[in-house]
Image (cartoon, rainbow, N blue to C red; front, side, top):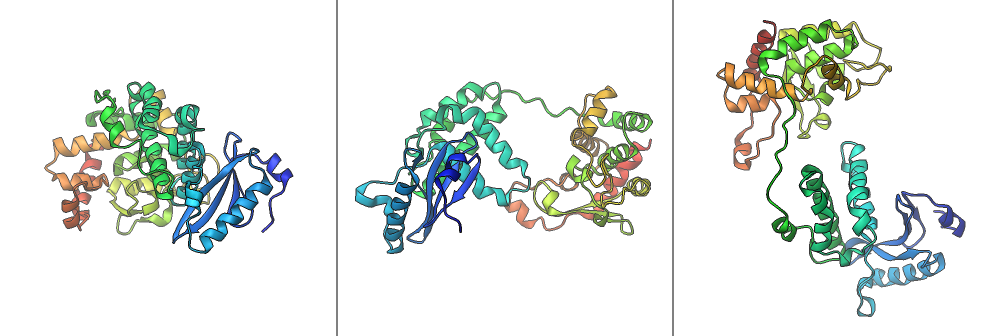
Length: 382
């Protein structure tokens, strides 16, 4: 492993992690701030420990400190309590980067890390980004959240959850003993929740007309129009359809098996295909671009854009989004059929929240769902 040099440190751009020796590395934040961190196994627990900020602490001093702490940890001691003082905690921004890096391998989408970082840079970093984790109080967290709590409630909730995750990581690392974004802040924040507008959805008796206008439209490709009809017929989510591949389709048994990594609940989901859904697949087969995608986008081997259908519906004058068709289907099933609640929920791949009920729900009610999906397809055909 190549050691760090003064020039490499000076010219480093963030975000980056530059390793040295004895667990020492330089973390460069997206904003360019540089800090020394040492990863040590302290009494059986792997921890990241701050040594200071560059250039206040230079390379030589950081190496000496790292070596001394490494020796203490190697001997079974705790260098964080050396001379009776805890090691300097990382700043909130540094801790956030560590948490993002830790979770990145487990996140299903690379966008997750970008979303975490963007929200924290926008709302948290300006006020608490440079504060040491050991100094952050519930008051600091309230100062971050209150300006957006009423107008951007969902964004504020996500920022709060991310701050809390970073604080809990700091507890595990020994930098704190509590979570300042926890129950104290929960109790202090206003409870007058703003009413969230549900996703725009068409009444189920207008869906057939919408599909007819989509089919007749010259504003979208044949692949895009077939994908939208397949989405409506299966009550699936947009990404599940747009990224569907032929090896997921079993035409003989009229079954589409969506892999776990593309499902919201991270669990494989079988979808019974109606006769019309099978016809849609047959039409889509004639549009193949040579890739495995059932509904290819404009560029070969690339799926349709996530905004394709929303844009098409808007241009055709419909106040609806693709996700809203799941609501249309749910209303149809509840009002026009005698389908049990559990079957409707299974058709939408909803997770049973009650743990006791979920423990007994071993069946995916597939054949009952098949009858429901065929009924939905026949209703849409008029």
